[in-house]
Image (cartoon, rainbow, N blue to C red; front, top):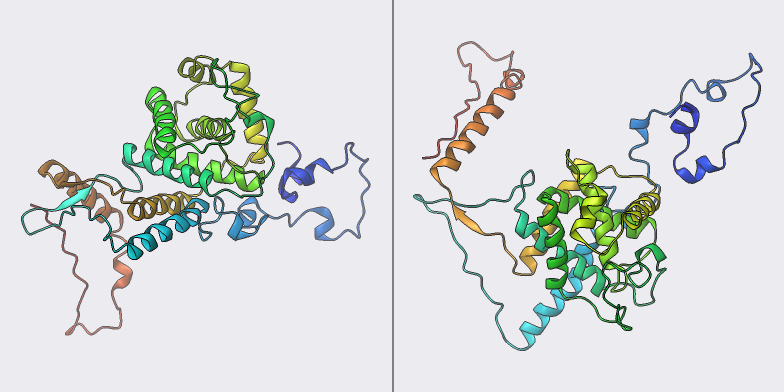
Length: 341
């Protein structure tokens, strides 16, 4: 914090490690340029869009890069459609509900308030595709995430623990247990997936049967502390997972942060991209969010939100008026409030 030059100039922790370890005595020089004196140091807000990694391989930082889990799921989705076409089996149609003049059907999931149950299901499905469609050549396996070296329970780890891919239901039960016991929100689940893909990109590792539980645990641990105001302490997770120690949780969190290069920022655009990609994943796998009829209470709530937005942007409507318009033919844009009955 005290070294302003290293904080603003260096683009990553790796560069800061190469800085001089001792300070040199000050020698005034009148011929120094602005670059030498540091007068035009780049502001931190100007460095937020610098690509340390290629955009296509860094979706957790850039809103325009496609998410890894969605691209890995496309192979299975295409195979399913191809198999249904060859065998002449029409895809299972979900009973869709359509709105009418008397009834409006909406799901209760929005980008600001996602549905907890179905968001966790989508995140578990995304993790499942990560494990199933991982790199066949195999990448580096870090010891801190190896369940054989750091087991989460006292039960003996089977010899083939790293051979069999977990089912989606198993992943869902593991994530749901942590979220239910720690009372975490649906937004935390989306941030968990962002941190998971950021770890895989930064550390250049794959999530596999041998490490998926500890990687997911570390991502949930970090996401809960960053997102929630009243975060769950590491000792609280030891109450959920009875056989894990606080020292192990602390070491897991520390190494997870180091592998992320302490980059825990999640821009709103990246968060929105992951939310809508999870909805696309759900639709492609017939995991649709439930539709419920619009109740009178929720209609009044939406109307109240509409009024707040109308008052907020009231001042923005005035510049829309054309000053060059004649007083005889003056036409102004009309704003009609939406009435939901």
